[in-house]
Length: 470
Image (cartoon, rainbow, N blue to C red; front, side, top):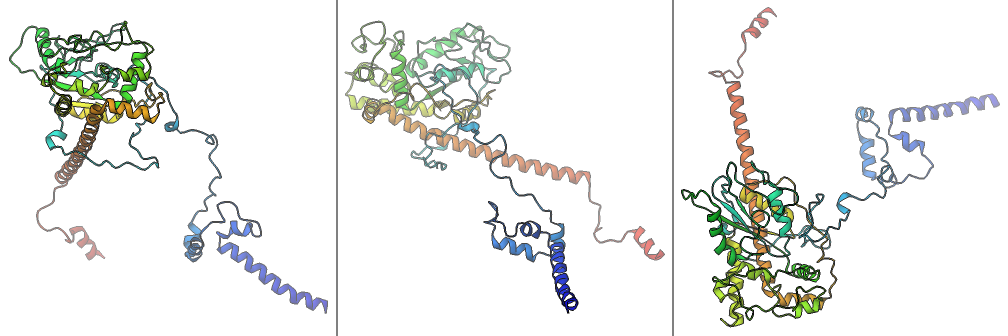
């Protein structure tokens, strides 16, 4: 009885064992799940979609057998990565852009980027013509053309000026010697300069000469330097400048003056003369204004820091120079602002301190000159370290209300020029690729010329002979 019962029990046990073995053999994907049967699922395996499992079960046997079994993804960050900081998250703290040298390259943050991290969409506010947006200068460095840099205080002009003399890839680079403030920037094969700036010719037209001074002074200075005189070619003067956010620029100038800096030697020439003490009083009685507080700096009504960018870009001859009794204040302000906008728009180039990489891009495309090293965006400056309340900020904006309007105009024009230049560059690249593909097709056509007549579908002689033989 027991023997018959054992034989009867052995048959289903062997059958069940055979089914399990065959199931594991024909279903390799079950190895991991079957091995963990009865165990809690691992992290990352519990959320596996049922649809994916169903698709794998329905796949043909041949595909399942050929499909390699990939190892499970590693858990957590790789070794040596946990807690690491990405390079773009590392903060550097350079000083004022007026005084800092070159630093490591970093990504340029967009000052207008939203707080949620999404990409800002530029919306133009001013209407400009294509002539205003298209800037390409056929700069003849071997001829008589001259780039004139109008350097406005505390706009990053010192850094940009160093780029002009040390960072442009030229056939004959500027010669800069240690210990000397000026570099020699001669044209190839000539002893005549192609750059009029602080670091090449010095302050030849006065310390931080403005638009009114430069346009009346530079041509005469260059004619004196041009020896022997060569009047066979016309001389083109291409004026360039840098602008900065008015509040940041104002705070930077205040900190600079607080440390003892002055510009007392500036000439302020206009209509052939400098202003009288009554026309341009000083804000302090001593040699400098060291230790001045922000309130004292703002309370001086004669402070040239107020609306400095508009005043240095406008034609002061239109408003009687520094004679404030020449016309009423509202009319004077309107003329100054419009003159500054027109002169800025008609300049060969201008850049913005807050957009270093775009400034580099536009300069290179405008003058067809390339910089050796990329520009660096300074995130931390002395102005950015100054903590002011909202009331002080509003007061600064009121004192610089003309600069605020000019900067909004300049930023809009700058962005539109950048997008227009980018668009033209993409169009040229597409045209270049199309031309390259056309030349490749023509080259292949010459390499494998087509035979005359319709050879498509014809039976070769060798094939016919083989058919007969077969």
